[in-house]
Image (cartoon, rainbow, N blue to C red; front, side):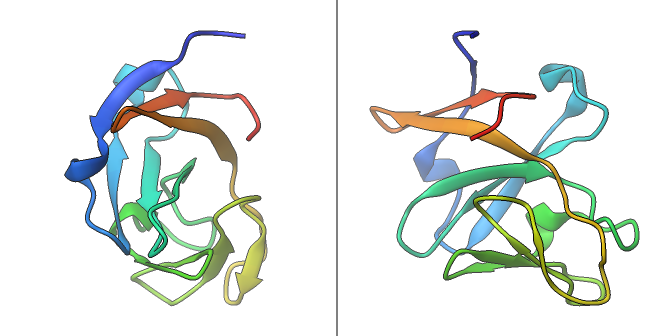
Length: 111
């Protein structure tokens, strides 16, 4: 298990929104979306919607789900499972921790 990568501060992400962390920093095949739910919990998913090329970090985050800004596909923030069409393939979740207001990402590690 790694120590993770410090990628942002909690204050960098407004409630109900997300930011993308570049794959050059994470070493992953896709950018990773950090998504802050309305209860202040932060989740990490692969950033590209599995239906069509759109950034989930630009989507709407609410009540444990993120909705893609392009065609409204919906994904569970905890598991990455599809919760609404037109996407039919799950996205990949990553472990994330908030420590003293700082967000630490563990790319490739399951939550």
